[in-house]
Structures are given as structure tokens and as C-alpha cells.
Length: 398
Image 1 (tube, rainbow, N blue to C red):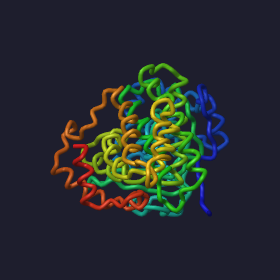
Image 2: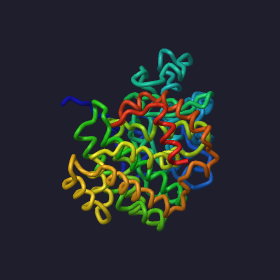
Image 3: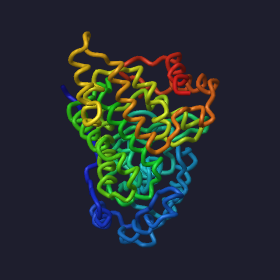
Image 4: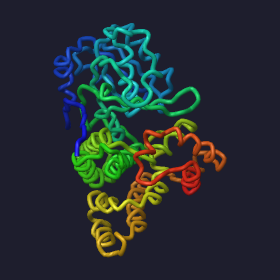
């Protein structure tokens, strides 16, 4: 089979890796870095630490990125980056700041012949970015989005639709995985971010995309091993840097997997929840995951469970697949996978009923219609999702 594989070309991984930031910026020719982050990072010493190791202690920073970032936030950051004559971007934070930074790098590039004229809507969809943009160094402070290694950036439009820009031109030039930067994450944020990464790996592994490939499958399974092994420890022992490093590394591997074998219906159903109710992406994925996985009933879930939860149900699931007639009892396999993942949510005391977050049956009807706009995701799902099926899946987890 023929396939393509794209990822971030320079990676610094592990405790103390932030000390390599200055050298990385130098290799990329960045002398005036502009930092893009969120308000929570400003309340920690992480921003100061990044400024120090960037060799520019007074590096300017935009720190107003919101969760599920609106378009206005992107243009605001572009204006500030241009005013500071930025020649490179440091993306610091969770998935939202990293996604915003990727788009700012394209729009704030003064070397672009269309500088000042290029609009975000011209880049919507797949493969519509034409300029290279400013170099980007991504430094994740959560472990879930994998945005540091993906060609994807997601934002919210004025009519509360989540839209995506997908292009290898927005893959960061370098990424630094400093596990100590994730220690400040709350148990809930740690849990639903890790579940987000698990879903990335699982949807990538089962994707029916024509670019699903052996390399992505290998990365997805390896991601499952690290995430399954250490997520509960990272929740219960937040200062455990080895557990934090494992989850962060697993998240990156899952990002590399789905960057090339893309995600599907869980994300398609999660996007309208985030856009309409402002809930964090990892949480919205966690909410809809049970219904979608039970609906899909993929045989590959046995491989996933064996990798992610080897001491719990992996061997039993494998026997289901090997001994049941007609290819195995896929309903039981899906149930065991969902039960194990939801146990992680339970450890962090995360409510998984959508009604708890103010979502009603009427909202489910509206969001099901919005799901149909996520065609780039739905085409990758192992089973067809119609508007009626989407509404039913929402109602199952209401």
C-alpha cells in the first residue's frame, strides 16, 4: 500500500528537556519569539521558565487563548505578534493555545506575498494552506491533544460551529515534552486529557481512512500501552514525574498516529458540544465515547484492550474474539473497553452524563444536525453515522 506520514521533525522529550529551548530556537533562526498561551499558564511559573530558557526573558506573550478558541482570539494574537515583529512562535499550553499558535504562524508571516490579506476562512478544510508561515516550537502543558505533532488546528466560528484547518504546513517545527509542566493539571484535567489521547489512538487504529497505515497502527498501540499503564497513577500521584512523562509520551504517540490516520465519529459528535456549551474538548470526547464505541463494535478493540489494559480484561477479550462464532462477540469487547476507560473518569470523579452539564434532549436534536457538517471526520468512521443515529447516540449518554 502507498501512504504518507508527516510529523514534527524535531522532538525534545523528558524531564529537563525545556533547557533545550534556546538551542532549538537558534537552529530555527528565531531571534524574536512570540509566546501564545492561555490565562492559566500565567498563574504558574511555567511562562517565566519558558522565557528564561528562550534566551529572551522579556519575550512578548499573548495569554488570552480560551478553550474552544473563537476566531476573534486568533486575529487578536496575529495583530500582537505582528506588532512585536515576531519571527517565530512558541506555542505553550493545552490543545487550544497550540492550535491558535499554528494558525497565527501562518497569518503573521510578513514574508507571505499575501500578508495582511490572507483570511482564516480561506484555509478551512483539508490542504488549503499555501504558505509555510513562521516557525513554531510547541510546548504542551497538558497530555491529551497531541497538537504538538499534528497538522490540525480547531477553532469555533461565530455561529458556534467547530471548524478545522488541516495541512502539513501547520505541523510545528519542533516540540518539547517537559513532563514537569503537566504537574499543575488537576485530576479531572489529567483524566479527560488522557482519555482524549486514548480516543485519538483508538480512532486512528480503527479509522477507515485510505491513509490508515502500519506505522500509525504501531504508534497507536504503543500509545495505548503508555496511557493504560500510567494514567491512573498520574491522577492519584500528581507529582509522579515518571507517570506524567508516560502519559505525555503516550499522548504524543497518539497524536502522531491520528495525524496520519485521522479520527472519526467520537470527535464529530464531541465538536458540537464544545462549540455550544464551552466544555473542554477532552471532556466532550469522554462524554460521547461510550455510545460511539458501543455502536461501532470494532473487532480491533480487542487489540486495543490487550495493549491498554493487559492486567484486566485483555486476555479475556482476546478469547472472545477467537472463540465466538462469526468473528467474536464484538458487543462484549466494546463494553469492556468502555468500562475500563470510564473507570479512569470515575477515579477523577468526572460526571459522564451530559444532562449534568445542562444539555437537554432538544439540544441533542440540534447538535445531531451540526454533526453532519463534520464530513472530514465521519468518512473515517467504521460504521455510517446519519443524523438520526447521531441524535440517538447523544440521547444514550444524556
